[in-house]
Every structure is written in C-alpha cells, then in structure tokens.
Image (cartoon, rainbow, N blue to C red; front, side, top):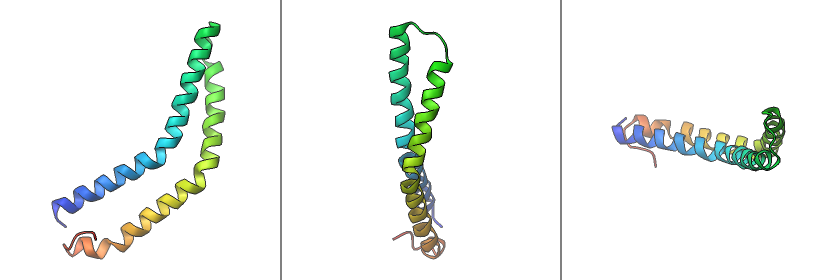
Length: 94
C-alpha cells in the first residue's frame, strides 16, 4: 500500500462520515436555532424547553433516514472490501 492509497481511504471514510451524519446534524442545528430564537422571543430561560423537542426531532430524523444511512454504509463497506486485493497489491483502488 502506498501513501496515496492510505490518504484516499481516509478521505473516503471522512466523506462518508460527513455524508451520513450531515443530515441529522443539520436537522439538529435548524431545530436548535429555531428553538433558540423562539426562547429568546418569549424570554424563556429553561433549557429543558429546547432539549425535549430537539431530541424528539432528532429521533424522528434518525428513524426516517436510517434506511438510507444503512444502504450508504453497506455500499461503501462492500466497495471497500472488494478493493482490498487491489490496494494491498499496490495497484491502487480502481
């Protein structure tokens, strides 16, 4: 394995992590932003007011996105496993 192959593998893993976690993190950010503005407008200082709705929405987002996330992980893992011989032999990933 050459250095460029290792860099490509790490880059691919980081891209997959961002692609899989990104939608859930975006939902959490948007809900937190909305609730923060709402709390500020209503002058509510209780942290539980923001925590419970955020957890519920993140849970719903995970339930809705879980099939897509699983498919993406399985596809990446399958491609990674199929490319092991090419990477180990030094030919690089196709």
